[in-house]
Amino acid sequence: MENWHCGVRTPQWVFIVKYDIVFLLLILLFFFFAYSLLGVYLYSYSVVMA
Image (cartoon, rainbow, N blue to C red):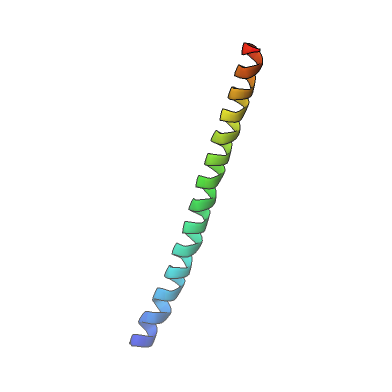
């Protein structure tokens, strides 16, 4: 019984870890996109001001 429970719980843990990694990658991608957008905005703003 104990062995079966451990066998059931392990794939779930692996799935959660994989899901967390995907979630972190999405957050990083979002921040990178927002940072790039901000950089382009600031660059165009400085060009307009100059």
